[in-house]
Length: 489
Ligand SMILES: CC(C)(COP(=O)(O)OP(=O)(O)OC[C@H]1O[C@@H](n2cnc3c(N)ncnc32)[C@H](O)[C@@H]1OP(=O)(O)O)[C@@H](O)C(=O)NCCC(=O)NCCS
Image (cartoon, rainbow, N blue to C red; front, side, top):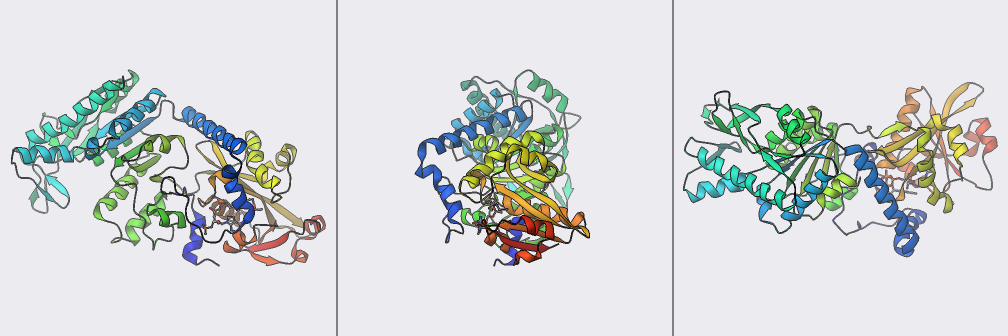
């Protein structure tokens, strides 16, 4: 039996980070059927692999449709520019742009500015992690920022895309805080989003450097991460990326929502808003200042309406494409609400429901259901979808006895084998239990031949067949000899 901390894992929707190319080391497999299914692509390369690629292609088409004309803001640390893979990163950004996604780039300029200040021997200091920009340093700050924007323009040109740098950011002085005058360090006051939208309508990629101007033309040095959040909010971006040198937010093992896969990889794969807030509030010392700032910025972006915030490493080839076109990303993704992927099933979902059930039907884990069976019970079905791609389903069907529907049966719980071990199954179960509770039901039963351990971990208990409501007891199939599990809600 799992501890409370471990079982909380099943309450939230999760992707699982894995070190690239490595399958997580597991203890004894809990089900040989599942292990067989997961191993199937290796054992039988042709049909299974082809099916996997077809599914991946379908997934990409789903994303292309969804993201067409959406705004993605990409903040890139300038330290990455020296890496050999950087030009590939820019090429991938241009590919995204060419698919119809509206891209805005916010380059960080810290390394470039430090280089300039050092070269011209101008001293710079930081107070509380914020660079204090003197009037003497400001021209070098602008030079550093402009070098980075120009380097990006060159790389975009190499890839036949057109960038544009502009004065879209209204700023004001940070002023004097706790007696410290931050001089030419500024804060973002307003983004001229209409102008930027116009540029994007013309097929250009705006590059927003970390310089802003006040209403009388005074320029200020801005924090580019904060700037990226402000730009993403102003443009109502679907996604905000922080592309840096860290692969994500380092996992805090004591967190109740840290999952086993994440503990293995060392980084959170998903954090919803509630979890991000808990991380800052309940574990104030567990994260390094930079990671804390990153979490705070991501939460600010979510509060401002940005749908997803991704923290990824720019040192990994293809990271952006993977984050955008696959639901199994490599970095840390922040998102709004843990249950935002669960919806009532629609008739258009039936083919996909049948598709994800089929391998388990073939393996004898699930009973065969046809389209008509699902359609008949459709109102009881719930699906788990990310960006319109169905990854799981489950149903909660009221069981009526003489006294009325005091209980329900949880059935048809399936998670696509390609999407296993990300907390989805547990999450669907918890959602259905919550639904039963809201409907005033007292007990939730389920029948299973192979999956009892999974449900025992979620608080179900094995009971005798005689405890089933009479009508369901009559339809219990002795040939199948399913175990009956029950949870009081
Ligand atoms: C059972 C099932 C829904 C789990 O989905 P999932 O999204 O992978 O589950 P989660 O990510 O929430 O949980 C994964 C954990 O459950 C464990 N698990 C998965 N299947 C299990 C099983 N049959 N028995 C015991 N444990 C199981 C995993 O090993 C993993 O353990 P870990 O957290 O220690 O790494 C999925 O494997 C499935 O569709 N199975 C086939 C259909 C089925 O049996 N349905 C139930 C009948 S109603």
